[in-house]
Structures are given as C-alpha cells and as structure tokens.
Image (cartoon, rainbow, N blue to C red):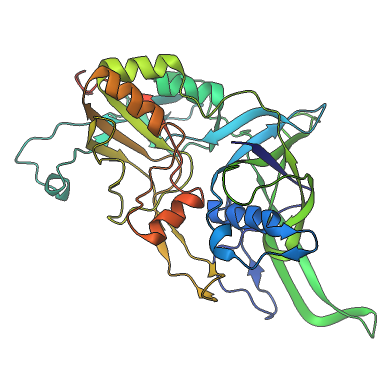
Length: 392
C-alpha cells in the first residue's frame, strides 16, 4: 500500500460538531486529531478527478480504502518521514508522588480475576476488569504523552515494563492548539464590520521544544492501490474547515510498519494470547465489544477477556450520496486495548496474527460497517500478554 504524506502549511481545523454561526463571539473548535473519514474523503476527492472533470461514480469512489491517518515527524533535510508517532496505549497507567515531587511511575494495566461475590455487569459479558495497583505514596494521573514514537510503542507491545520515570514529559511531540481572532470585512467600505468578531481553534502541525529547533509534523496514511481509483500525483490541496492549505506527497518510507515484528509474532504464538491496540477509532455495533475481532478465523477462536479504554468519541458527517447528515455513531478511541486468549494451533495463530496486524478490526456485517472499514476506522496492532502469569 503506498504511503502518502499530508503536510499542513497552516493550522488545520477539524470541526467537532459544536454550533458555529455568524453571531459575535462564536468560536469554531477543532478536534485534537482528525477522524479517518475526513482523510478518506480528501483522498477520494483527489483520486476522483480525471483531467478537469470529477467522476460521478461515488459508489466506486467509496470503495477506495485507506489505513490511517497517523501522525509523523518529517525529516529536516527533505519532505519524508523521520519518525512515526502513534497513539499512546491506554493500558499504560501513570502515577505521581502524592507529596510535592516530580517522580512518576508507569505501570501496565492487566485483567483482574474477581471473586464471584463481586458482582458487576462485566460478569454478564464474561469479561474481567483491568487495572493496576497504585504504588505506595503515589496517585494516579493522566499522562501528557499523547503519542509514542514507534520504537517506544514497539517495545511496549513486545515487553511492557513497569518503570519509574523522573518526570512526566510535558514537551511531547503533538499538534499544538492555535487560536485566531477573525473579523468580517466590508469590501465596499474597506474596513471591518462593527461587532462582527469570531474565533477559530486550529491545530498547528509544527512543534518547538525547549530549543529553537522547529520540528515539522504531518499526517500519513496508507491508500489502497487496487481499486478503480488511486492517488498518483503530488501537489497542493485544501483540507478541513476554512479549506486550509496542505501539500500531498508520496513517501519513500522503508519502515514496513504494516508487517508485525517477528519477535512479537513468536511470543503471541507461544503464549496463545495477545493484546490488540487501536491506532484509529473503531465502531462496534455492541458499543465496546468487538464482533469481527472475536469471530473464528484462520483456525483460531479468539476469546475476549478484558478491555481498557477511555472516553468514547462521537462521529457524524455528511452523506454525499443521500445528500443528508449521517447518523451519529459512538466510537472506541485510538489507544484502546483488548486482551484476548487465542484458541488454536501455533501455526494457525501465526496466520491469524498476520491477518490481523495493521488491519481494521471494525465490525463489517452491514454496508455501513463495511464503509467504516474502507474509511480507515479500527486500524490495530498486536502486543504480547501472558494470560497464565499471576496478575497484580
């Protein structure tokens, strides 16, 4: 699958659905990261142009499949990827000293075996809660690190370790919020109209740590090259609200992010258990419970044991075929982790890993669910988990 880089030339706005009108003092809010459907629509818009005319076959265009978007850091010498930045895993929990101090502790969440008398709605779903014991003298805190470099995430997926860190990094590489105040301009009077002010909150895809070096960030996505349409040319375009300027360019990245590392595959095959982490939000008909992921396949029957996830997201949009708003749908956010036991032979588990790694685990029984798959929702990676090891 070809990799495409979308480098913003100015702050981008991905509207979050809150009302925005011409009333004075209104503000357009941006999501902290675009939904996959936004980039899927942008990809199909570029692929659909044939010469000076846009194809009217929207049904075929909607079959163009993407994986992503993912955040990347660009190299200083040329417009290409120097580092992949992936969503922080939700099973990595952080704790801070209760008394004034700057020492933090990172601990992994694991499924917890509960006694039969500890009744909960999880028992009806045959699931276990997950968590980690708070270290003595520490309290749980939210991590400020929203994206992990691929090298760090790969190590966490393979051999997650509980470690103590000296500080909770606030200088994490991530798009920064940028506020702008706008006016309404009177072209005839050549001046601003009275009392017509509004604000926009966008994402600035550059990052400056505690130095004068500017790091350039961009969006990257894998675009299917087997459909009737494909992306073929680099060039400028617009993206998001207010049609902010971006530049599309094919990448020569050789990281092979789409292939599961051998050490992770072998460990999963040995343990007959794994963790599945979302890289993009996913839609499941049963809320947080994935149906497609737990269906038998490749001679393997996955068993869902536990889920670690944060606050769900809501997505909607505009249906270009029906010319009407799409219904709102509840999404499991990127970073969510599913603990699975895998019932099957070692050879079949290896095949199952290859089929699941860097693929969508979205439900796909209905036409709407299949469209979520085409749009890039539910992209996932696998990590190790020894289901037979004692829990905390």
